[in-house]
Length: 250
Image (tube, rainbow, N blue to C red; front, side, top):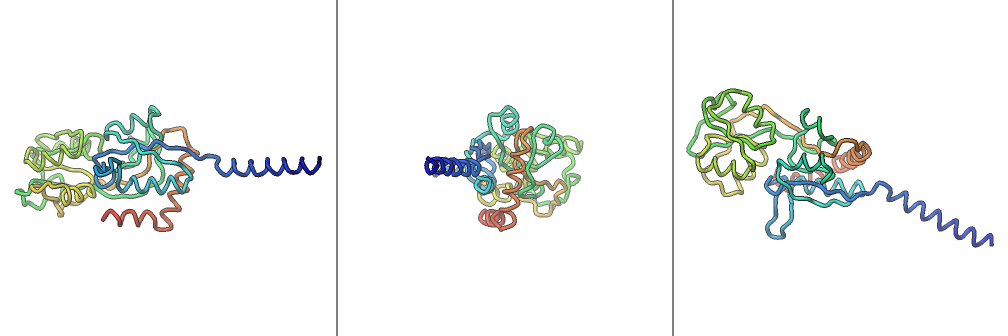
């Protein structure tokens, strides 16, 4: 009898170890946009979302012991979908800003950069700042910090608001706007790979809105933030995030 009791006790101990080893594992529904090349975009060859932030989220999720499912969403739907619980996290080119921190929580930063400026190729002026664009018709994507800064500046004849970056790029390419402001790495990648042949990236422009990208999660989940931050620290320290950035040419 004692042998059988010992046998079952051993099973219980093993089961306890197994359960405790997987405690906290989650399947995370992660919102990403299909148009934010090269950070998050649709790979039409296999109909999946790919990009820098998708790769980084995959690394972080694996390190944290979580399963990651990517949910394609429009940029403007990311935070509303997160706050209403339709998704568990956002992995996109989303800056950590005070306004956003009022409604969602962010992990530690995983990447950082500033804004970029594009103009029609026929415009050869070396713009350095917003002041150089005074009186022009400019555009920016809704939900970005660049849009508010341009609207608040009072410098422009008109600030056009765009739902998608592709629409913004197309209007710049056709001359419907005089200039557009968006995330520098995305603009650089799109102009060099996206077929916008009548558009020029203004290399003389000096960014004044540098930002840091983090993974956004719904408020009220400190344990999730802590787990993701621990994973981020590991994939940063061993160079895995650097390898992703290099892979995408950034």
